[in-house]
Length: 226
Image (tube, rainbow, N blue to C red):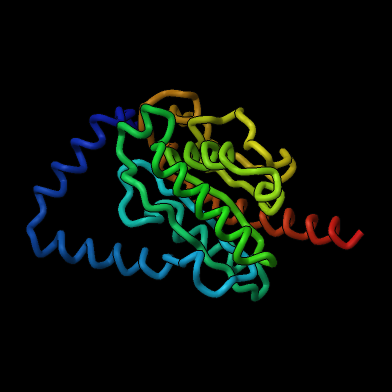
């Protein structure tokens, strides 16, 4: 039976694990993670894709899209999209415990809102997906609060994994275009701060999220055609 881990204890464990590894092993792990994450760093100022996912990773995750949800989520959406050009833009922010306890890092929330605004302005034909995992879901909610109505109307879907703000609407996005994926027994989704096994397995839900996005995109196209 898996015992719950408090977020503060989890941070200490991560530090202990890092110092227990030889330097060469740490370098190799970091290189693998960096390679996996760098390929998902898309610039809002670059060529416009058919669809761009603006994604905020969870607390203590590395890179700008993390590893638990970000990379497999992008791959799942690409597979479900029938050949569409799908990019993911990660949100640069500290992803530390202090930010989580404050309801989501304020700077990261503003940065995410800025990315969404830039995409809406620079890429008028791009479908915009906003998403976050754990503290990243807090950022998603906070960023949505900072958008004007015109920008919010450009959002195809909002996807939250392990959402600490479960039950709260995503401002400006119709509930039919919002999916919140929370596992039974996930204390974070219940407003707590314990990291249980249920909070670490959202990578298994990326296919469900991808299918939801494709249905939302199809519904949006149908509405625009009428």
